[in-house]
Amino acid sequence: MTQTVLIALRTTIVTLVLTGLVYPFAITGLAQLLFPYRANGSVVTDDRGKPLGSELIGQPFANPAYFQPRPSAAGNGYDASSSSGSNFGVTSAKLRDRVTADAARLTAENPDAPGPVPADLVTASASGLDPHLSPDAARWQVPRVAGARHVEPARVASVVESLVEGRDLGFLGEPRVNVLLLNLALDRQFGRPEAMAEAK
Image 1 (cartoon, helix red, strand yellow):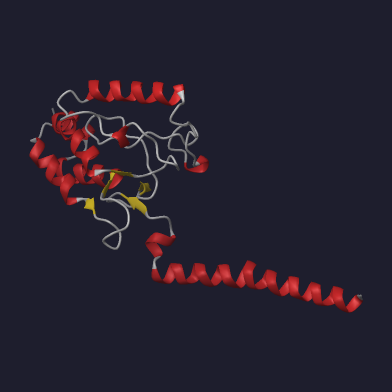
Image 2: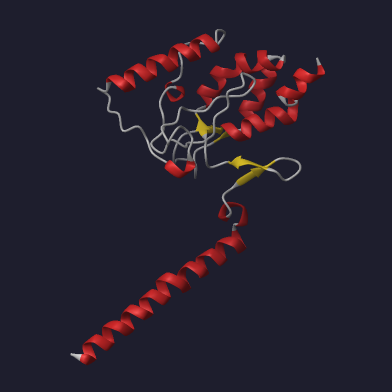
């Protein structure tokens, strides 16, 4: 009996050391060595090194001069510590009411947008933190963003097109646009909306 307990204890200790210490430290070290940007959260910074967010986590943009992301059901919205979807099903009255209200709001805020509101602008992702939009959802917002920035829509559209990411490995997923990177690209090319307002 004692021999069996000792074997079990040794096995437990070796397993804990290997899987709880050696493996995590080895993987963390390799990640820091080979992919430091990704391993540290893909944090996007401004010209002075100030963190602005992660390109992997969606965040809200209320200013009309910025592209808006998908809605979020994570916590109070875009809460990275509370990643989740709403779990409302297709027959949910709450989901239908929210989508209808969001579609009406977006239509009012984007009077010059072409066609109906794209589905991903009124539907949350499963995580509630998806940082991407479909290219169509980004293109749909171009007239509003261009008007708020007082530039030609074609110039804003060209920024959108330059940031469209293709399918992973050429066949996985769908083409997409990262909203944070898109809005930062607009600021670099046309200036920040606050700075434009102060210059007037």
